[in-house]
Length: 142
View 1 (spheres, one colour):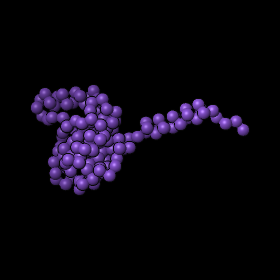
View 2 (spheres, helix red, strand yellow):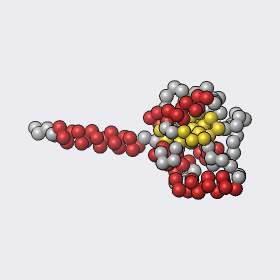
View 3 (cartoon, helix red, strand yellow):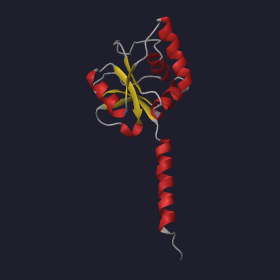
View 4 (cartoon, one colour):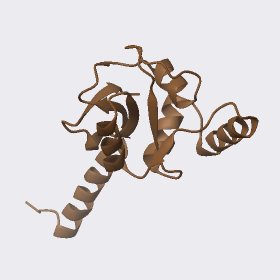
């Protein structure tokens, strides 16, 4: 019986792990202390597109966005708002220019989103599903 070479095994392992990472998704999260248990896709889109600021519990939602160019940000807006990065930039440019709304607060990375959520139980953010821990609860998964 002929066994695969170490090089082939390493290549196979790299392919398995990279495909698992590529399948890692984005999730919408709130503080584990929040009393909101779930949001719909429409609710999340409306909050992040400044069309509403109401949470189901009556509190004012505080969306937390990730930095421009972040892969998780691009995936979030693609799946939730059906918009790509260029469309989001144009969307916020128009709303800001006309004075109708300001874009959500931006932070860099999943850890920063979780820290911001810990500061305010009405804050809503998104992170990669691999970053979910006890400090947050998933309220929507696209």
